[in-house]
Each structure stands twice: as structure tokens, then as C-alpha cells.
Image 1 (tube, rainbow, N blue to C red):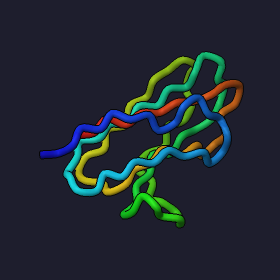
Image 2: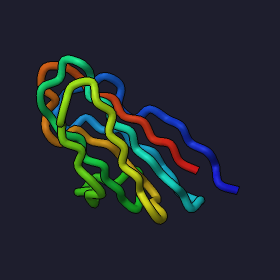
Image 3: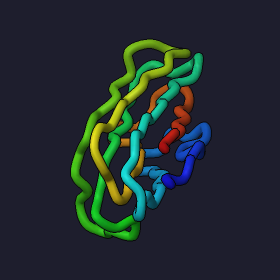
Amino acid sequence: MARYIDQQLLNAVSALDTAGTVDLTGDPREVTIYVRFNASTTAGAVAVEEAYDASETGTWANIATVSWAAANRVHAVHIPGTSRAVRTRISTAITGGTVSAWIVAN
């Protein structure tokens, strides 16, 4: 039986390349990533990426890029299929505020 994961990946951060990673090894998954830009943000982007291993030090494969569209907005990225390791990474620095991200998987 697959494990249920509900975990925060980014917590009110803004710096370029700040990342939050989760290891999904062992179970097929339905995965959703939630990205929330706070009320004072004016720009920025978060990459949703995957790799074979959570400790990968090279370039991860891009699944989606969540670009700032409005302050105080939640974006959802649904990932079909199976991933061993998933992360969210600030790919363009967040301007004027912060961003948070969560993963829900089963």
C-alpha cells in the first residue's frame, strides 16, 4: 500500500535556488504540488522538478514552471505517473514577498 505524504517543501522563502525535496521511492504515486505566492509578491517563479535520486547534485528534469501571476494566489501542478524524487526550486527570485509550496501524494 502506498504511503500518504502531505509535506511542506518551501516555507515563506524568496531566494533564488532555494529548494525543498521529497523522496518518493518505493510507491507509484498520484502527486499534486501546491505553490502559493503571498500577498505582497510582484514577480518570481518556482520550478517543479524530478530526478532518479533525491540527493541528485546535477540538473534535475523540469516537470513544470509556476510563474507569478498574481499576489495571494495558489497554483496546482498535477504530476501523472511515477516519480522517485520531486522538488520545488525557486527558479526566478521572488520579488516583494515570499512563496510557499506543499506536496500531497498517495
